Length: 414
Image 1: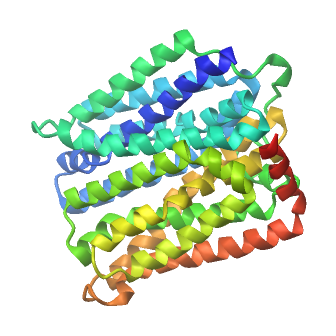
Image 2: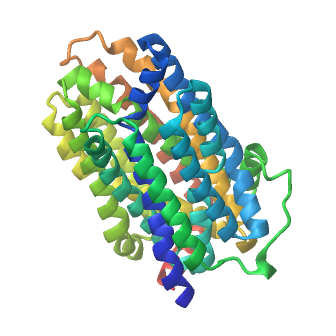
């Protein structure tokens, strides 16, 4: 209990600061790239290269960093990742070279273990029945950072200094590193550590590890489809609303703030009660159903104000990820939580690369249509199709593996 009181706040602060830094960066990184590129064509090319590079490096390194935390402990890997993030922000704030900026994104992607190790840390110090609640708390911290970050990033650039948000993000990361250096205890005892297996410490070996977990198999595909559907929605949202409803950055800022608020409420306030009442498997199915209906609604909405209502009504969808993480985590051995969480985060990283390749060309193909044409919502309908597939696969899998339902129900009752 003493360890939980000392470490849980730090883990939540770490996730919040990391997401806050990402949020600070989102409104201004395109401007920094444009300042260095000199032309819109080069700006688009380099910005896309930065995003894809970060996602690919993260995908490749997440399982390795998770495996390293299983071998050497969570604390050193977590502190290294926080320090690397702070340094990458400092480089971004000072560089005048696009090549150096690209290299900083490589470093940032390679050291972005904070989410992986944060989830593994929570798995270490929580009981199985409380694990999904712990993952939900991390999700709430993520949502809170997503609320504050973009708003603060816009405010910091009001004076005309587009590099200031990166200095602020670097300062917060390095202060958090100092805080963790002095207060964070290790969560993984020596007897639960395991040697690194190179066959698992890569994204493809890690994914094979996930599919080998008892009763999990097909749920990895379900988890991937859910994340891919979410990222298609997120990567096309701003362009879609500007094309169809002529939304301004302020309109989208308000909508994204509302999304973050719903995530905080669903994962940080109501998740424990929902898990107690429905259990992880039923809650995951309910959340997927909510996301499916909302995606169709987003695509069919012909007035911008309808989107705000759908965002609020879709709050249940934010419970899917922690519920699924809880189900998968319980199937993994206690010595493999870092590897398991690394593999899950590698899947998330890969979907951030694939989603724009699907969503943006599709949106471009319908952008010429009049705003009232239902085909303008094509990207949301693709998301709904992915979510429908995930829902049907999950339903069939849970029927074939009733022990998953029993296992989560027993854990929640405990």
